[in-house]
Image (tube, helix red, strand yellow):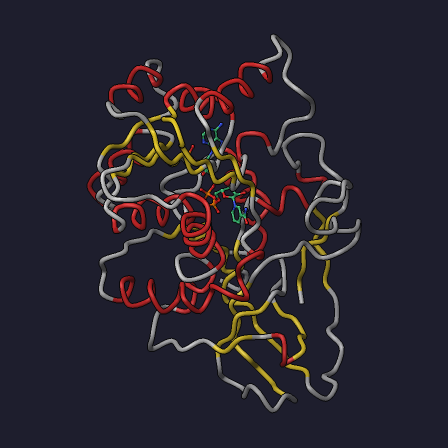
Length: 336
Ligand code: NDP
């Protein structure tokens, strides 16, 4: 297999020196194992956190370890009773072209039910993140207004569409005119805004005449600053991700805004609740698939993918993910 290992911990944006390509011989299969050819590797913002030494909700990737990641693969050889050669599976094999896995840890995919790579996006972890954050924390109801940024990505695009199904108005925020146009025309958001526009704050205020009831927090940064004053009493903020911060190397300078933030939370009775989707995966993932998969199959919930060919292009694609150069769920085809 060709694989990419973590060579060095990044300071800021992960440079090429942080990644090392290695050619290694895979071990022969033991009982219960399967040999996989990776068809799709999912690139996700959380991987940036794993590159740091600090322990987060998951252990950091060690120097010299294969970069982690969800994958869709074809079984080339099986010594497991649960899968046979030729089947496609969801595995967690990381940044490589081939892998050996325990047959019990992979999930079989039905290519007739949905394109297999959707198990990494709209029908996988990111789609479920949107579902779980709304069901358990955001709880949008009819007539309310929801705002979400990174809205063309796999989490944000699902957040907006699920909020609309609950009867709420969905306002999407994204970087650049093409993404904004896609939010409006492609995904049917009620309003869409470019966070890079010089008058973004004014545009946002105009787009939410009745304030914001749910802010699904994907990015932090300037978008948070613009949304916070617009949150209504009893507003809910599922704190899902802070993509604007992942490459920061220190705290921002300037006035301490924590007192104003806490005062706003207090006086407007706001609920901020952080979450990791795995909290609800065991109990709610099946509900998610049962509710959402038929809608995706019927084209009533839409999604977009951004597919990059060649494992050698994964580091640059990953840098692009945190800078907004991806347009839709970012996937790499390591063997293409
Ligand atoms: P995306 O494909 O949406 O990629 C991240 C996007 O963030 C970029 O494309 C960019 O979009 C946007 N972004 C980056 N910097 C800024 C900025 N300064 N201001 C505004 N937007 C910015 O990723 P996902 O859909 O996979 O993930 C979305 C969020 O959800 C991430 O924060 C991720 O960490 C989080 N997440 C959390 C999980 C959990 O369990 N809590 C699970 C999965 C994801 P644009 O071009 O529009 O600016």
